[in-house]
Length: 68
Image 1 (tube, helix red, strand yellow):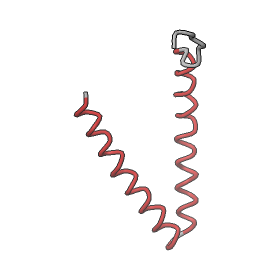
Image 2 (cartoon, helix red, strand yellow; image 1 turned 120 degrees about the vertical axis):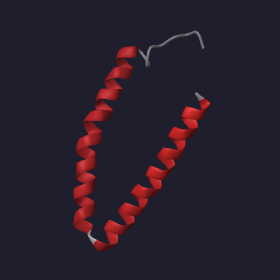
Image 3 (tube, rainbow, N blue to C red; image 1 turned 180 degrees about the vertical axis):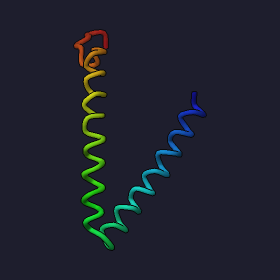
Image 4 (cartoon, rainbow, N blue to C red; image 1 turned 90 degrees about the vertical axis):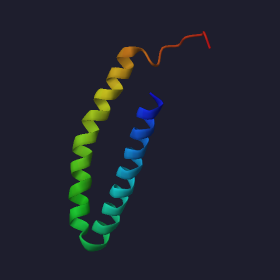
C-alpha cells in the first residue's frame, strides 16, 4: 500500500504544479478564461465535497467516543 500511496502523492504533486501554472498563465493572458475555469471547478467539486462529507457523517466520523 505504501507504493500505491507514493504514486498517488506524486500524481497529486504534478497535478498541483500544472494547476498552478494554468492559473498563472490564464491570469496574465486571459482573465475571463480563469473565471470560467474556476466556475467550472466549483460546480464539479462543490457537490462532490458535499457527497463525501455526507458519507463521512454516515460512517459516524464525528461520533463522541471516549476510548481515546
